[in-house]
Length: 500
Image (cartoon, rainbow, N blue to C red; front, side):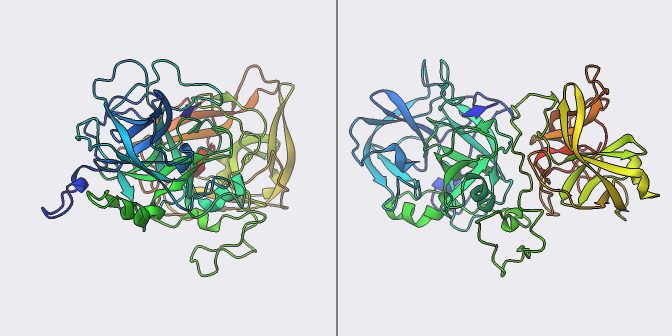
């Protein structure tokens, strides 16, 4: 992992459902790196000749699921499965070890495309469930994982490309988000991603699975239950910007898994995502248009701004690094000026529209638009800010909503996209949730004594937190920040609306 987000059945039901996906020792800290013992009790280490090769997940008392590419053949010789591990080296008092009785590789696995990259391992004897060894629930065939769904990936893989996990090799955990298949095709290659795959990552980079994590689980929480949505399969490098990791989509294999696990069936649970999936309207050159029958499909006249939304080619941000940013890091952040002076910030949402704050910002004024100008494509050259282009304002429209408000600024002419000027994706779902702890980035203009003109684009990393007595339906709240450093109208990365 590279890091730079119960129900009781009737007596006649399978007892596995009572325990699958439950973590009795769940005491993890969001954003942590080392996983405390027992946090992920289904995690398995698949070893050969005493060395860790791949990860896996326990799905019942005697079956483990992993990736097909971990096995050159179905030979069980020299393979061993270790459960209840926290470290690969040193003592593991809760460890259980089993040899492998059978390896079942999906019959349609294609090593050249990585399609159907999934395998099942039957243990030599059943394991006894403890607080440290428990099965995970599996995503049922009708599960829906919308773009942005929060996920966790675990494993003992490399912590950077070419950098192994250091002693004592503690199990690592990383929080990522689902990247819809349409967007993933645009980023990884239109012909690379199939319906049997699911993608996840952080588009600025810095969080991902890596070599050695293969076969391990990607899980999401629904209520008190953890459900496995993916099996670590492949990726182009590790944690590179705009290259999300690719996983085998577990929900596509319910029938196949049940056909081989004849008794003590795994616990399949339907995972549901609320609201419309923004990915259904995502498009790019070479990608077939969304189906016209889809209620979220958009016509060709409205897809132009969506084509590259949220795409930041020059964003090489590293987790935890905040401050003055290089040009192109946030290509949708614009500077709005009145009579030659900067008064607020905004975000480009299409070729000719900018979104900004309207309640506390000077931009709420709608008089004499000839005095206003929008600067796009920020760069920092020799200590001074420069911009790719400036455009006049045709119209400012303030929402008629009460309370916290927004304004839409229409530009006099459309802008041309390049590495420094790109539109952001905006969340159009009224029911989408941004859970407490999810990481966000805020970008806006602040003061810097080293800058020649005193003003530079800065960013800050923060997390969503409880709003207390403030309405959760109209606001998203974050942990306290130095508001002297970032001006109102700033943008939160990953499409989170923000209110200062």
